[in-house]
Image 1 (cartoon, helix red, strand yellow):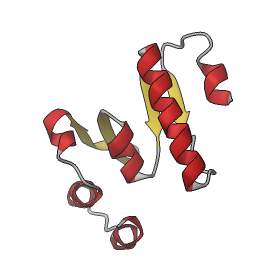
Image 2 (cartoon, one colour):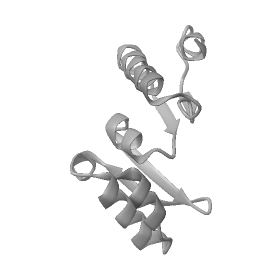
Image 3 (cartoon, one colour):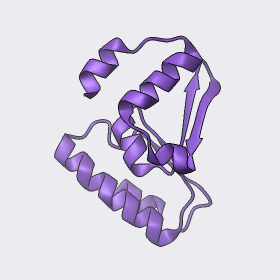
Amino acid sequence: MTLLMATLVKPKVLLLDEHTAALNPKTAEKVLKATDRIVEEGKLTTIMVTHNMRDAIAHGNRLIMMNDGKVVLDIKGEEKKKLTVEKLLHQFEVVSGEEFASDKAILG
């Protein structure tokens, strides 16, 4: 409902901050499909903040990852099309020096 209300008057930028975080997987999938439709039909510039790598890859056309308040990855176009969660986490590990062994186990 909040997503619908946020788009009644076309915003310059739609900010979605973890908008599926508290939802069960089935409901989150429905919300993401509705979000994709609303964004596409309204031709909305959208910033979706998420910690879910699969959703970021599946629903974003440009991925920007930050570490300690700095952009460390900016992926779009052909590079984004070839991306998997594992490749994304590996790239992030390389540029940030952080390790995500536990995230890899959780994500796939």
